[in-house]
Image 1 (cartoon, rainbow, N blue to C red):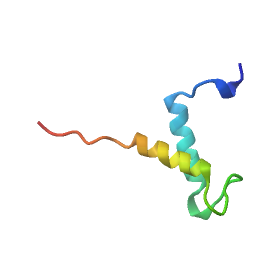
Image 2 (tube, one colour):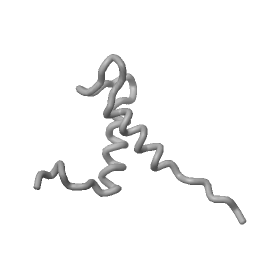
Image 3 (cartoon, rainbow, N blue to C red):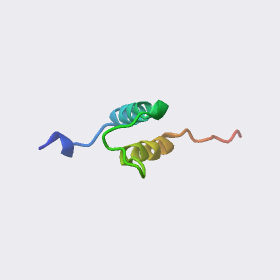
Image 4 (cartoon, helix red, strand yellow):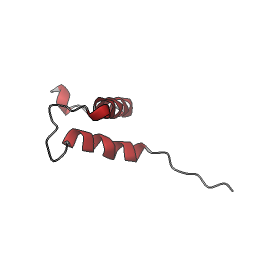
Length: 59
């Protein structure tokens, strides 16, 4: 089985999201960046939204 077929752990996804976003800060670009946007950055931002903490109501 290829390593690409193996599921990523949650920690690996968090690491990849953080590295991707950090790699695009300060107007830096990656090889996947296109004039109309970057799919890699869009993925990282979607995953980051999923990781956002959920507010807990006080009882």
